[in-house]
Structure formats: C-alpha cells, structure tokens
Length: 235
Image 1: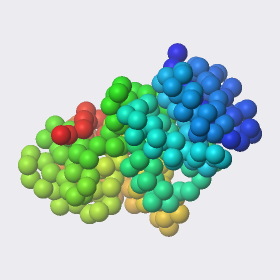
Image 2 (image 1 turned 180 degrees about the horizontal axis):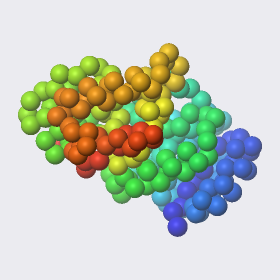
Image 3 (image 1 turned 135 degrees about the vertical axis):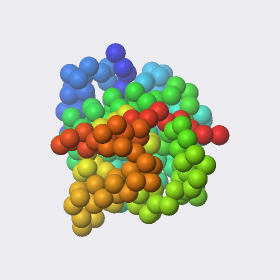
Image 4 (image 1 turned 90 degrees about the vertical axis):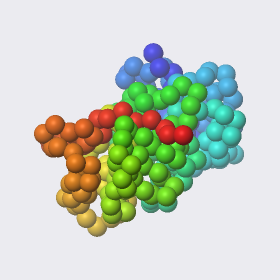
C-alpha cells in the first residue's frame, strides 16, 4: 500500500479528502503546514506528497524548494488556486511532479497520484524537472524550446512545442483534451478543444506519426491522447 502525505491547512479539505484517499487504497497521513510536512516526510518517508501551495508558517512552494535543495525527490503534486501558465511553469521548474487546480474532482486527484507513482524514478528528479527529454530518436530541449528527430530539427509552432513537452513529461498517461487545453493554453483561454486536435495534427505531421499505428501519440477515441513511447531524461 502506497503511503501518502496530505498537506493542507483547510480542515474541510483534509477531513473529506483523507478518508476518500484511504478508500482508494492509500495509507494517508495529514499535515497542516509546511514545517510539519517536512518533519513527517523525514519520519514517514511517504511514496508521494500532496502539497497545498497557500498555507501559513511555511507555504507549499517553499516546502517543495527545501525538499529539492536537500536532494529529496519524493514525488509531489501541488494543489494550486491559480490556473495561470506562469503558476504552472513555476511549479514544474521548482520540482513538482504535477499540479492540480482547486477546486478539483477527487477522482481526478487519484488518477494523477497513480500516474505520478507509475512514472516516478526513486531518488531521481521527475521528468518535469529535466532540461532534455529523449524518446528514441526524438529529443526535446526544454531550455531552447527546440525539438529534433533523427538529428533534424523539427519546425513547430510554440504551442506545438509546449504540447509535445507536456505529453513527454506525462508518458503513458491518458490526457483529455480539456486537460491539455488547460495545461498548454491556460484555464481561461477562449478556445475549444478543437485547438488541441489541430496542434496534435501538427505534431503528427512533423513526427511522421501514423494515426492507426502510432509510434508516439495515440488517440483514445472519445477520451484524449497518450504519449506511448518511453521517455527518459537526457544528459
């Protein structure tokens, strides 16, 4: 049974969410601020931490920074209350494995937890913290925002690069169009999910990926997309 540490200062959340996560098959411990969370992490060594950003004494973002500076790469899902792309970028750059905007569906949180645990690399930074993502002949340099295939640079729009980045940092995870729209374009972007399909088509053309027998991006009818090739952090 995986051990979770749930860190939130709102009793209305912890009193309902902790039992829900226990019913989902997790061993759950609760902390109410960042300082308590750091003590519990050292004592319990949880498999994953669910960490609220806005808390007294020591907020979630600083708690995460302290963990990563100490070389602790326990998987962390941040709970945020701002859906802006800058908030998301900061969360991932600081070493979060994933983030979820409040309010959220608890079933979505369980799905995110299981996905993060599947791709976690014990003692190593998450793919979300890697500068270079590699999947066979496909390489994505996140700093320069350039992708290449078989050594040839791909000509992609900025949104297609951002979409590829999100897919590659969430390999083998079913990602709905709504989630991709939120993650890449922002929760308040005035566009429909057709925007996602258009950029997926752009990626497929650039990658030479076959819709019927894909190497990289699989379509799950009525549900979304999945990056099916293995991904690792490059040197």
